[in-house]
Amino acid sequence: MPRVKNSLPAILRHKDNQLGYINLSGELHYLGYWPPEMARPPLSIVEKADSLIAEWISLGRRPLSNARGTGRTINEIIVAFFKHGESYYRHADQTPTGELENFRYGLRDLHEKHGHRGVSEFTIEDLRNLRADLIERRLARTTINANIRRIRTVFRWAASEGLIDAEIPARLAVLQNLKANRSSAKETMGICGVQDEQIEAILPHLTPTLRSMVLVQRLTGMRPGELVNLRVEEIERSQEIWQYRPSKHKTSHRGSERIVLIGPKAQAILGPLLSRSESGFIFQVAESLKQHRNKRREQAKTKYLYSKSKEYNSTRQPVSKPYSRQNYSQAIARACKKAGIPVWSANRLRHTFATEGRKIAGIEAVRQALGHTTTATTEIYAKSPIDAAIELAKLIG
Image (cartoon, rainbow, N blue to C red; front, side, top):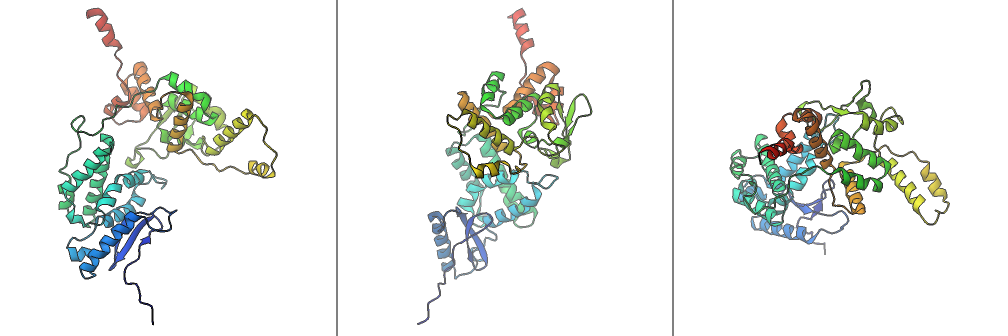
């Protein structure tokens, strides 16, 4: 007797994004993240697949979008947006900017809870409920607003490409951003500079490479992303004050030029590092790891046993790989814990530079040093000094 063929669609895994999906009458329906270490799909994916297959069978095995009369699904426009984003969110040298990862995070709830639904079914109430879930999970208000903004961006892009009706993003735009202290969303304190005492406290717990990175950022006010991508050939050293012109930076997609000025103190730190090579990344992971291993060997109570494999590995040419912003931030966090002080972020060094610079040279000089278009943005970084107000209080108060 011939084997009866299973007529139910199989759950498949997308190789690139590790999403489970099923093909129902030529339409792909994405079901959620399928961890690569799992051979079988998670229960959540199986349950979604069962629900969709049951609906598909009840509608006569016709494409669900046609049978429902809803057109494209939300997952379809998400996939289309990511294909667009892979080429759109790139620096001038065609390396990814990182914004697509922000979208991946911001769209996760939309995909998991509403991805199988038709776009025309998604209402402002659904968007409000998504936001309420984020509030309940105690995400910061600014993070919630950013996630909702990215969801709107996807719908707006889909409408501009003619994939969905323009009325859909228009109705979602009615939902206003959460205002500060006007909702139950968690509020975060504004970022302020880090004290020099806290900077000094972590230096003994960093490798020489990471120590140089922290000090150079403190002395120049550059962004963490600009620091980790610092290259020898991008520093102009013909003048008294060096100029670092990063090929990719936060506003490079707008055609603006970024110049980071490097003074004598930062030059003294960078000088020995620049003499090692005529090109390439200045702060390299391989060099820092080597320094870390050497320090551990020096501190070890027992000497390492001689190993041919270790000897071979130590002579291999290290890969010229820079730190990522995440690696750099994690290294600072680890050093803070070792020093027994509250953890502070790398971007606070930029705030410290801005606040000190404002006292010395004024807000306009700081604006130029930080690379801002207007002083309104600089005001966020450079805390306004109250020295004049203190003198006034002495005279009048």
